[in-house]
Length: 160
Image (tube, rainbow, N blue to C red; front, top):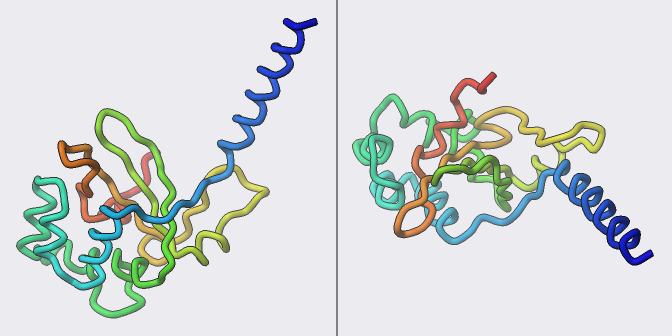
């Protein structure tokens, strides 16, 4: 009887876990994310580069490389850009895949996240890149997780 009860509990726990993972979980941005997002909203490329993991993307941001300026900061409100999404608080972050010291997170204006999710569909509904969400890659450093791509993953072709 006791073994059967333990087995029943284990099966129930697995079923609950499986159900819980099919619905995306949205959380508020943490302090490091808020700092980086604030630098984008303020159009402060020097501060954004300082907050990023050091590498080619941070240098491109620091030098305001014209190839990425429009994608990160946009030209005017409403452009498909990282800044466009960040200027619609409150924001909500959905953590994606993480492995080997790297992770990706999807950032939405809270209202867009709620409007896009469909209980009939499994997984995360993202909507339009640069308008409904942004995708940000992070690298684990000695100082914690740091933005590594200025959220340019938003505009990368989806992996097949």
